[in-house]
Image 1 (cartoon, helix red, strand yellow):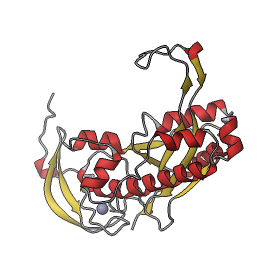
Image 2: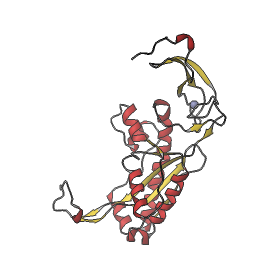
Image 3: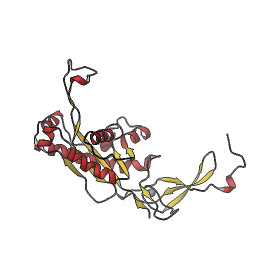
Image 4: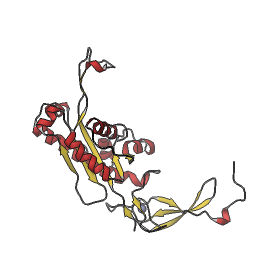
Length: 263
Ligand SMILES: [Zn+2]
């Protein structure tokens, strides 16, 4: 059995940018018309494949009024630093750069290189669904949905309403639970996704998505260089669902090998 990597599923909620505008449909707002930039109000995270429930942190009334997210971002960054892999929906375009920018502006330690999985990108690349937002995926997978919210919740949060900030935090935590389940459902059907397990012993024959050694032969996998044995995993993901990921042997079948290499 392989060793599970530390995989952090996370999501952040931010305060809106505050700005002046001449018209409601103004396409570009110059920097001198901006009043306040974005900051993190709450986040939630869950260690994938563990029994630990999703957890979260949120700004206090004073912090939201001061637009100070240093304490909450510090806490999230600590866990992101411990993680081998980060999973977020639209994380590459939103959550990751927002957190990274807040680290810089708060003079916090950088995170360094992190392997990231963006479930929005995975969905767009691998599935012909009409929509790819988390709420839609949760619904069509039968895994639940996002808690309905509207602008009023954000407005109450930035006004310093602690009940609203708690509500926002619960909303975020529900998103992470939903994302965790959506990620499980997607995993067997996507390829070229970062591995979630590692071998404990050298050349241990394990699945890099569930750690299982159980596999069945599924024909051959051919590259320009050679022909390799192909397998399908018979193990289970940490939530008990079937893994079924494919992999190939490291060594090519010698008897299928041609003398020359194609150009
Ligand atoms: Zn597997």
